[in-house]
Length: 304
Image 1 (tube, rainbow, N blue to C red):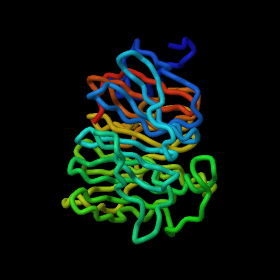
Image 2 (cartoon, rainbow, N blue to C red):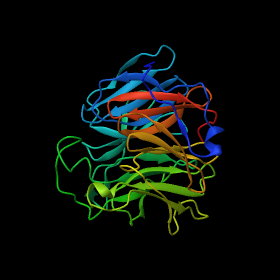
Image 3 (cartoon, rainbow, N blue to C red):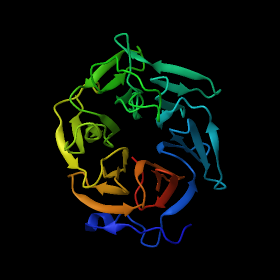
Image 4 (tube, rainbow, N blue to C red):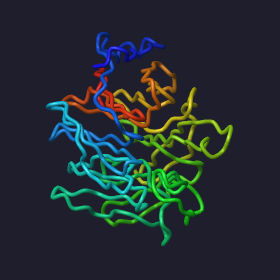
């Protein structure tokens, strides 16, 4: 553990109850260009994440602390998650698709087009308890050759989609964000939170998280409400704990927001943060993808 790593900043008593006072931010590995999309696999006690510009996926083994290359090339993978069967679901910039890695290692293409047009570059992904797959599709993988291949978009905007697990039907569920990015459900799945990083393309646009109520059918969304505005940089990826607090990237820190939208605490990291996820045997270890490094912090709560 590096001695120079900062400690969490408590802004509200609710955050103090979530933090282990003597636990320090741990530096687990470095040498990456842009770390993103962490996903924890409890059966193997390992973490997978993407190093997008290096076109590879990395693997951290929690049993011995080792870091290795999981997949190269990775099609400039970005967001990752784990489905209920323990399979890896991945957003790929280069191929502009969402895939699933089966238990035997083969890769299944889940979606690569909407109404006959190629996606922009799927970015972040979550799997709901009914097996449906929800993912965002901004243009970052086709904006330049750094995280994919520069190309003109075929779709007229950046949207969020829902993939039906039974029929394979694809539905556009969020049409009103500029650059939808990170997304996650509340613990009861009644709210879908979505980050908008459109300030990368529209100067002065607030960097926000909006909350979309999930309809009774579990498939459609209602009108959104504003949840939070990022105080520095923008929100990118985030996850929720079992109490409904949002742990999100925010500039060079991890920010924690209570369910009522109050910013209750900050974990300074010292470099731009891309995304986070909960892992460990008890889901009480917060893994943090900094731009060039992987970090973790043990907390007093558990991932949702």
